[in-house]
Length: 337
Length: 274
Image (cartoon, rainbow over all chains, first blue to last red; front, side, top):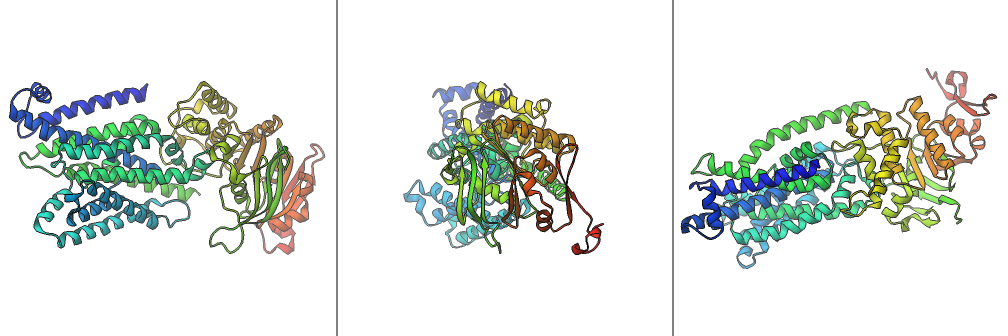
């Protein structure tokens, strides 16, 4: 009952925040105006604001927020570490670099699918690099090594992006820099459709892996003895979570810490069972990023704060808290053995 | 290969990458179905590696491993998990998980990807928790339990798999006398009901008391195997453990006692042991 009640509550929150997101902006609208515009009635300008600008942007926030949260929860199970997250692991950076390369080479003008595909390739390259660097320890991945690997791989991709930007023309540079900071501003229905096609099937497939992901949280060897095909589950889950990250990055740029904050909160709410955690992380992530976007748009209105700034302001303190706790328990465990 | 064999190793050799010597060197052994089989040996003698090799978790350099008459490499992991419940030496949970959730993981090989627990599953989980006396802990987080409670939770998870063989790697290492005896008596009773028990342990006395057959490993090789009385010989144990050991029979219980002596009483074994 408790997971169902939480799901209902979060679902309701998503709907309310979605409506709020459409109502609030440089022109504040009433709920009645919003519904009228969604039905295709009322003032033409209001209809344009709602249907062409705010609605796709709010839907995008739902998709990307949900996707990044889901991806974060999956990386946490795979790496057995609550600090794992697409941005911290450098995977978002890899995806962004892939996308920047595709933009700079002009691939996206002729091939609409090239941007997410290039982002996906970059994300996969990043995860391979991180695992290669981090898996030097004998048993699993040490949290400090993993975080360092993420930082280093992230720095490498930032350098790659800077290099590509330095040899690009001014127009590409402007659009790319904005997009590297993360923004939902460019959302239109075409991009929303693209992200939906990537996010929904991938998300459903990952929820289908919830049971083996639960086993991985207690260790790969034990998971194997309990009947999980550990290597296959890991391969599939890494690829799908990278794809989810890449779809979000390709559409909205780099938005950090969502995959850290949201699964942590959901775990406090309903526990660590991935069959519940994954769908609820999607809902909570959707609500969180839509809310963050409202703050980003309104706090310095009419200017807009990059949404990645908002998520970082929430995420960094939480990260530091979790890091302290994680290192603390690890030291205690080391002293005991 | 007969129907009466649970586990069988034939000339099993395992070598880890970059290791100077094989972890297992031509080990042959047979665990009869329904028997209580204990594996002994010093640290690093290959006990855990033997467990992994018998259950297809490490690649073999040479030799064969069979589970119920079939090469272990041919077993599908889910099918294997329905036959063999394993309690490894240690594990750590990455997130807060309750006792009930841990035990319920034992039903993994019986359930589809999105299927929820059936009454049969719930019955198996409850029964396993009852046997291991952890029902009152059901909703506690694993991180709040004592070492003994954690071990009993892990044994309960293996029992929830409803296996025909239970494989345990030093399950009583962190238990006090009462809980250790409870686990061992539980294992003995399971063996008497027809379950095969494969136990790795450092307790020579208790192995002799509870097990039907013993295997003594020494640096990856078989030092002795057979009935407890045959395996627990003074010379063999002193050679394998590199320590003066006295073996005696208790006239009251008829049980074999193994007593490590002090090196001071045994000039061949170097300086003072105090």
